Image: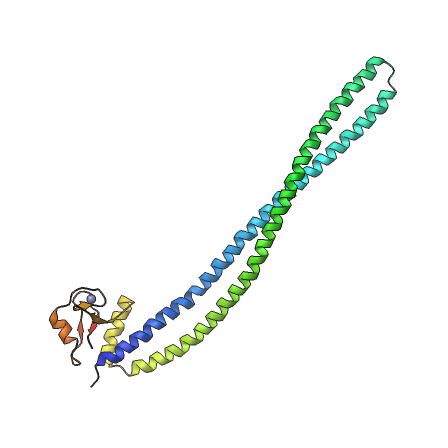
Length: 234
Ligand SMILES: [Zn+2]
């Protein structure tokens, strides 16, 4: 006669595959949101780069308007200068025009810096856009693959559950109950093989010789004295 633990041991193999499968299916939504979160980071970087570029553009525009208005003032002063009645008036305009022209020159220096910054800002925006675009394309593929994987695994799960139910029918009812109780408690193995040297395959403690001997006997179901798992010694 075959050992009653043989079918239980086979059932455990199926249960372990089921546990792994359920875990993989359960983890897919988290994997998807992790991937999407990655995209959120790159989207945010692009928004920051665009804001910074917009800010530089606004400053540049402001400086340009300021220079324009100062240049108009110079033109006006020069007209007034030609209409000056006295040398003092004339010299006062020379001085005034000099001051405004220095202001214009300072602003134009600042404009050059801003234009350089704007070029850099444009390059950063383009870089962020390219990175995000690439990520979006890659992510769409990854998300699609995960959805397909989830559907495939769910179908596999249904088949495996049915297969498991058939296998459970072949098992001794009372041993199956014991197995189920231990499996629910331990969550990894309920039936373990005796390891070489007479150690428990679950907790690796040295088993008493009586237990390893009884574990060979098809009429006896014994458990490890230390971890309580069913000991199988075929
Ligand atoms: Zn043990």
